Amino acid sequence: MEAINPKYTKKIQNLYKLERQHENLLDEHQAIREDQEIEEELLIDCIKLAEELPKSKLERQYENLVDEHQAIREDQEIEEEELFSDCIKLAEELPKREFLYFDYQYKDIHGYTSTVVCWHLDRW
Image (tube, rainbow, N blue to C red; front, side, top):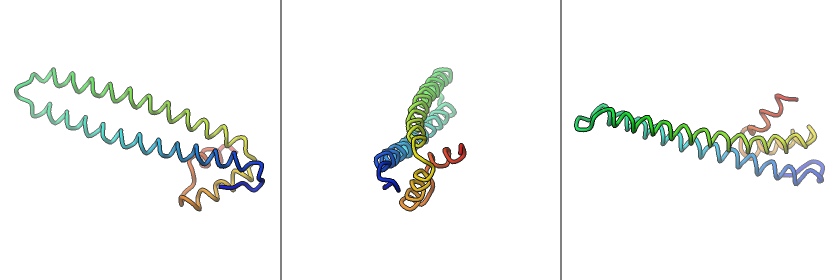
């Protein structure tokens, strides 16, 4: 990733790095959420099939699992927001021309517009 004006090259490269970290973090968190949903569904199936254990014990396990997953999701959302905020702060330091050139290069590499570009262009 390069800038039109070389004095912005480092910021462009940092923005690209942060953007990719953010995208990777979102993918990682999505995979965790999908695993959690499967785990919750399996426990629901166990509750339905259980005959030896009192259902209240399994239901408590399910509630605890859901609470644990919710706490994990909240932590993930905070982590995602902090990283995205860093991306936005860096994007706001760039002139519009440089930012649009960043978008052009990003699309050329990945085939789609970055999340930061989508969000930031709406503000201009």
